[in-house]
Length: 325
Ligand SMILES: NC(=O)c1ccc[n+]([C@@H]2O[C@H](COP(=O)([O-])OP(=O)(O)OC[C@H]3O[C@@H](n4cnc5c(N)ncnc54)[C@H](OP(=O)(O)O)[C@@H]3O)[C@@H](O)[C@H]2O)c1
Image (cartoon, rainbow, N blue to C red; front, side):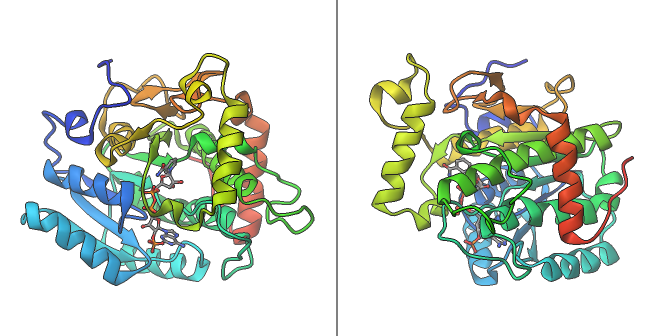
């Protein structure tokens, strides 16, 4: 395995790759890490279908990428992950014209918003970050199954340390809402989903959950000084006595190119064949009990029972069952 780390960039990960015959689909590609992933992958020949809910914003992102790479093969898909009918309509349409996706990167996300609900009544972070991607991925499975060495990469976060999923009250109908707890639950859900995908579909696909690091993007749009303070306290509390976040009281920030590197690595490397379903950070396989600001994770994210129960709950919420393969 090549020795990558926190500062490795997307272009370094892709050095020597020719992705001319590969089709990637990326959610939340209108900004931040999704946009950078689309730029980097298309720069080495990949066809990239960029999904977003805001067409103007997506057009602007594409214009930016094409300004430096006019031949970039970029396609557009408009889908709102906070609306199950939008997801179903998009996939119905997509499957009529396209037969294969080689790599799906479930990158879209929303963080620490006030209590809001999706069109279908789910709490917004759980509904967007997990349920929307759960439905999108499963509906796209016929195209993914037709892909060459298919992969699914799910963006998670060190924020999984804020909370595990709550299967009794996934939509904060009984418990008091807390923006960080909600984000934590949704990012833990991304990892359980990854694990269950690996169990159900691992015979023909690879799937990984990724913590990208801390990168200044529009993800912070809902942050208030109080939420920032709460986050710093939570990070300090979860840190080990020796790690950098505890010593500095801060977070090690990454550039956009280093931030998107782990998901691009997960989407393309041949080094992870023995690690299907793994949690990754800093372009490395995750370490249980390690520093969450790097590639460390809490043990509760690897729990087969929770993963199976979350899958069953998610099927119930989207009112559709998806078979194993
Ligand atoms: N940045 C970090 O430090 C960090 C750390 C850990 C994990 N992550 C994860 O990395 C991923 C990418 O985040 P980012 O930092 O690149 O943030 P970002 O710049 O805010 O990008 C998020 C993308 O998701 C889209 N999105 C949000 N809600 C959506 C919906 N209902 N339907 C469709 N698209 C939707 C956004 O579109 P709009 O602009 O239209 O809302 C945007 O394109 C997220 O999953 C996040 O949890 C980021």
